[in-house]
Length: 254
Length: 255
Image (cartoon, each protein chain N blue to C red):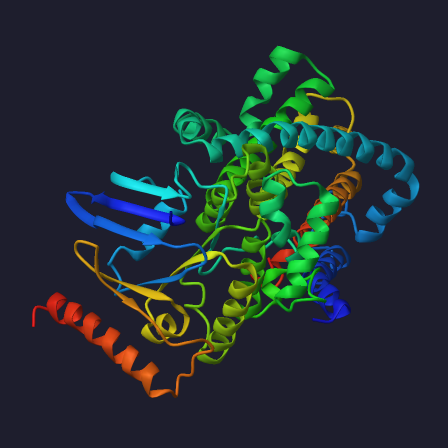
């Protein structure tokens, strides 16, 4: 499909929302102290962008560090669990239990253990990202085409070659799907964690705006969070498109 | 001494409560450079036999020897061409063809040059950088054959490699396979359920019968190559083999 058309279609509901918002404020349906018009929010971006950028940087750094730690632990572990049945049997229940714990529920414990600062936030993001990543990696390894493992066995390929040239590439599309979910979970967690456990970042910015009664700043913060979430997701999709070129035409675009 | 020697090979599977005797005391030998077709209706154990020859499954009893050596977990001088899904979809044609050599620790430069040779030999020059999904079914099987030949196997095992191809492509592939076989002189064990294919390709056809899987009879095909399907002798041979198989089918259906 035409790129421009895709963008237009994607932006249409957002434009509608903006129009409704504008109508609500000009029509005076709600007091403008609580629901400021879009222009007020735009002004926040104009006046406070260095400050906002600093908070964005803080949040992004935490998410990236947390995601990176989750990747380097969950992916190798997932590859091993998918490969060896006994490891799968040992870890299955544990994974199912821990993955259903919402990261937010662990915030009080994280603050108790690690105090206020980057450490609890990053640990919570890592935890939130770890489970979708490991589950999708295990799934990816398990769904490898059996015939390919036979090819490897007849060729007398060693374990390292099987892992690197067969299991990892075969699981990669699934891993990247997991990464998308992990990034979403990480982003969700960082904002929540920053509302309680840290003194910087977008979550903190929104909380602070609330205590100083500035609705336009709250909304500016929310818009920023949404925009970055979208960019993150698009980035990972692009990455998947790039590294999984071999899959084109084999699966439906997601 | 023959290249391949099977002596009283048996294999049973357990599927829940049911015990399936896939192979019952199968004995067979193949000479150097001989082309053998394993033919039979489904369930006759021909694919099981190939898996055992490939070292993918152990036999319950009996002996399998390649060049006088028992096989255990695959033989260094054997290669396999699978029916479908045998190519790595994330590797280009070139890297697929290189894989068996890579598994043996052959260096990158040699891998590349040998792979190029075989890609040219099977008529896929210019397709080195393509991915399997960009190729037709026949081209994919040629990649599989090229990969199997790169290690210069003495024994080439083929598991219904042309089963998923249309008739036209299939006939082209059969001719090309015979050309390659005459060049490289490997012993071939080729599993098929097509009588026509077996008569066209084989030096000897091993007809297997199901439940339990046994060698029913061995039919030598004397016609010189290239064989002509329009030749009455060809048709006569097909008829003879069909007759043997139909007996089995009648038996199976209890008629």
